[in-house]
Length: 196
Image 1: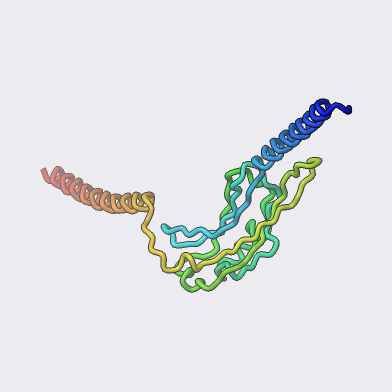
Image 2: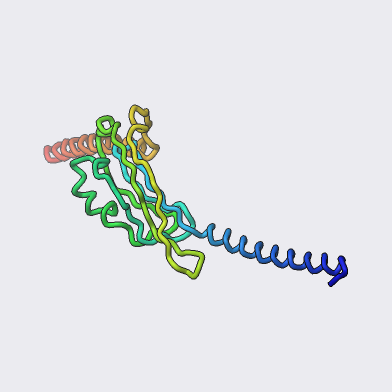
């Protein structure tokens, strides 16, 4: 191997082989990462019902197992709802959360958002996912700040569904009046027929 051309050829082959192995490993890694769960938690305001929900959502493409909060501060929950919240996934966890799926629970209702505008809590949500190496599971932790301040004083409009419901309620009231009037007319016609 004293010939420089042979040496360069062997060295190029070695580099090419290492490069191929690295490319295969990178493709496997990217493929694995693309199939992982991504669990997030946040507060979501429902304008139509004037209430706040705590939401846990799997935004990723893989299944999340054993989703749970490590350190949940109950002060973020309206006092009258705390007992119910203690029986929900907040304290019991979620055994399995499929991709794109959501769990939500009520944490505040009414004008409580204005009263709780200074409340915030840093929470850690954890879940188990499949590891790329030897198919062992690994726990993933995500810190999130749940806060009310960004919702305070915000102006909302009702959704189209709410507007449809309000229109349907109005139609129902009008139909009751029409029905009542038709019943009165029917009784009047019935009494005229009896007199004849």
